[in-house]
Image 1 (spheres, rainbow, N blue to C red):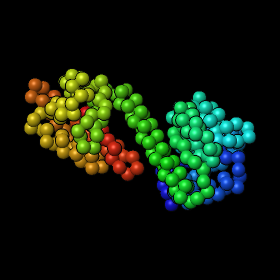
Image 2: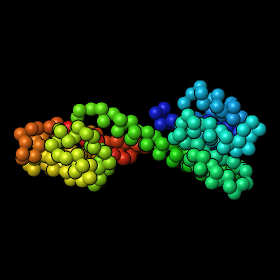
Image 3: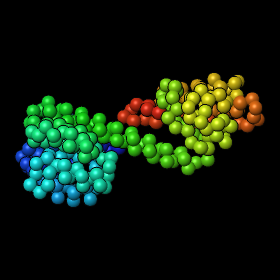
Image 4: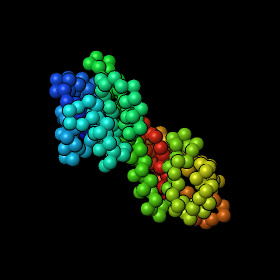
Length: 245
């Protein structure tokens, strides 16, 4: 059974109840994380959205009360980022470009074959994973900008800095533009004799383990810092390393 924290709650809107029932069965069979809530009209789908949170929407296009594109436009007014997959049998060559222009995350031709639902499940899980990662990064950046601790976010190979907050300049004593452009500057702020320990602490976090070390700043300062390093994990993979001091 999947962990509740990893569950993916889907809203599936299609005016064909028989197809909808089959689709739900096949999707939930493809991925045990999926929890599918259904609606047979756009109006009902909007009501479902108002009553609960969802990780992704799957929608048909040609429906009696409103088209899938119309539904998408309504969703985008309140949530510009929520994954939205148009899954339709409509054969209109302009629909794909219209859907992407309107903000659809993905488009897939509706078929009843099991293989098509394997593809749909893959597209959904990929879209949700990307959306969650982007949301985590936004929330992390907002949090780090409000603290007086020096914070830097590095890639797992420690070769690139994706974020450094303003407090890092005063804490580490290095110009913020240099800290943001060169990951070596983050370690160069540490005393040469303690630099290997600081790098080892970052490398341990890149391998998935939180840890910390007390070290001196560079030779021009008599200050000491407590460096704590945390892995940022998405789908059991370390995607970033957070260092705070």
